[in-house]
Length: 247
Image 1 (cartoon, rainbow, N blue to C red):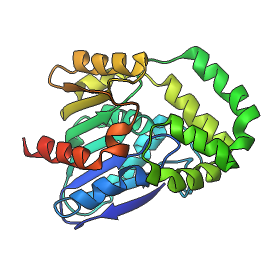
Image 2: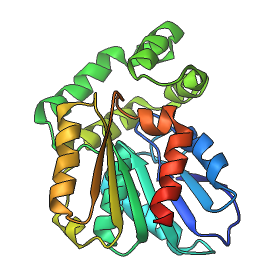
Image 3: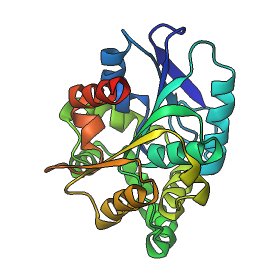
């Protein structure tokens, strides 16, 4: 796993974990907005372009990140955040270490496994993976993800660099992950966000977190699709981070 870091290493840390198939640029603009006050660390998750490691499991990614944080200088982790796969890894980190951080910002975490989707990933990618390097196909995929246009070149470059085996592995992990019972011991103030136009599974997962963690807050963002909060509205996201930490 590789890392991008912004801001003074002596400052409180913010750790933000990108979505599956993306990379650190998921939070590049947020880092620029927050680096004057915090040490913002953006890992490149295993199995993604530039990570240097194959993807194994969500649990091992979480353990690896905890080992990394143990060796980092500076202040404690003020806030842990993540989108989709990154949100699942963040929740797993809090399951493994309930006192890791003061606050958590969880965006679009899926906590309802789908056996059918899981089973279809490998055969589906076996037939379509070769299209990943086609710019026209990538543009169609990109459009379906509702990301702002200036992120296309980052998306296309890094999609082309992901190995088929890694793509299958992290997509299967994403569709199989369930909330761990240990998460109820989490001591962070949990703030859960999901877009109004997300899948039913994502919205139900947000409700589950709100129900199982009584001190958490759940915010459904009007009109937004999956990942649009951090990917398309960095100023709003950075403002939310500051509001959460200053509360």
